[in-house]
Image (cartoon, rainbow, N blue to C red; front, top):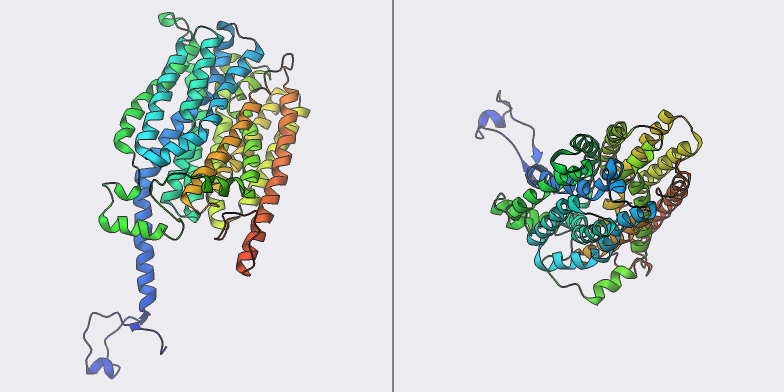
Length: 487
């Protein structure tokens, strides 16, 4: 081709034999730009793998203890917490929901602080605080003490998940993010797998050193968080380009490869213009409602699965063990759907499918009387939640392209998601509803609405992309969008 630079790969020097078609074998000519592109892609893959090895295990460990500490009240309840503290069903619901109330209130302020002072100090600090609070929950004497500690725990944990998602979105491209978030969120399922056996072991310590089994649950699960928080001061970073384990060349490459996907970096203050951009973007509210409804499903199983399963007629010890297996299914589906979301850019389809599966599981819980049949339905619901979880967080994250807008958007959507957690706190403590008909029916309705909204969101993003491809005016409801959205 006359317009291409061609390089011939050969170890020999040109000579008369080569010119005359001699007996020396030469490698076919390869376009120079293809060689350079392949080399750049290989170097980028090596860079991403190196970042993965340092970042993902660290963030996953943090989320594991985060989810373990927030959801252990379900295991503690059937281990005797409610009885020993002489709490009524409504009081237990208030204690469970108290966490999410302060979690919501402090979500945006916490993200603002993180954006201002950096992730290293802020995330380490809040982890230390919530670890200490979890340990202190072992020593509460009544409903008031439990309520106060749950309020404080919610405030401390409020900024963690939005902060981690914000950090991940600064490190990885949109097409790389879904799988990493899926692995990260899989730790929530892993904590569900581990929490049952931990509670089973803790219950066996009943009466030792004058403590109840539920007190040992808080002690065993809270102490490692405190230790991990102290280590995190040395392990976390504010910006990936500041770490010591990347070379200067790799830092430059990382900054260059992310410059296309983000509009600003640093610790700029969040101003009213940013808030207006997020609040007047229709995506924020649809994603927020989806997050709220999905959280109702997730908390119903994540926190109350011990209560639901015990309602099938199993003993307390058997229930603690039976809570673990459904989370294995959830974890597998989180990974599978995280990979599929990145490869196919079909997040709307995956989110819709997950909601339909959840609805099917709750239909089974409402119509089947056999205990093991009902237990099978828990697996189906868990699988649907596992399908939905990685999409619910990665989908909105990659559809905000300005970093500051993204930080606020994630916080608002997460805040709305936690409204769902508050609602779910009251679904499975209804007096006299031993079969949990009310909670299961409510979740069936919620999952159906979620499926409809996921379809709507996918169609809206498709329309937005079509407008940009045809260079048409972008509707004002997509206030922040100037780049292609991810469906």
